[in-house]
Length: 231
Image (tube, rainbow, N blue to C red):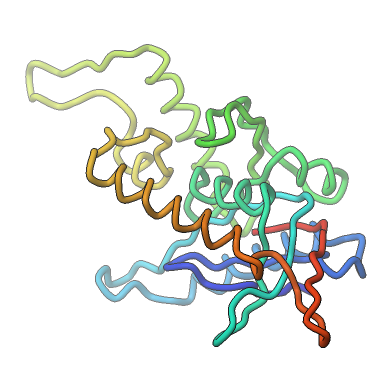
């Protein structure tokens, strides 16, 4: 099955295949993601009557480290590049769609259909080939069309204003709202310092004796390497 790792703010992290017991971990996690998207459709948005809540889903498959972290409130955590890449797939994804990396797509070829998004600039990763899952339960087609429309506008590097009515010709507003933007905001110096301090604190925590390690009954620490799908 799938294991819920933790919730981080408004994000929900899950993993499959971490216990090396199943070979179809990518399929299990993708089915879980599609079921989650279907379930969210029944949750009404309190501030927008008639509209349901929306979620983005990102998936990546690869190796990671797992272990018990904490003394007073120990918890089972995962660390590694695979976890970070799954987070990037989510943040660069589209509402109510599943955005996956090439590694996950290769594991699911022949069982699911995908639409290639081409090479994309992913923060902290560089250029990556990513894919959109084609499924009737998701609005993948409008998301793909909006993504391609935005790509054309960005490549042109210009916008046109109608002088008669002052309207702006560019990406469709509804499509822009439907599809998450990839543009990075201008960095705020104070926010940058805060992120840098948070990053240093996280690095110190990760370098502690308990980070990414499990302690057995005799006080010895054991690190574990796991390979699976993260989302």
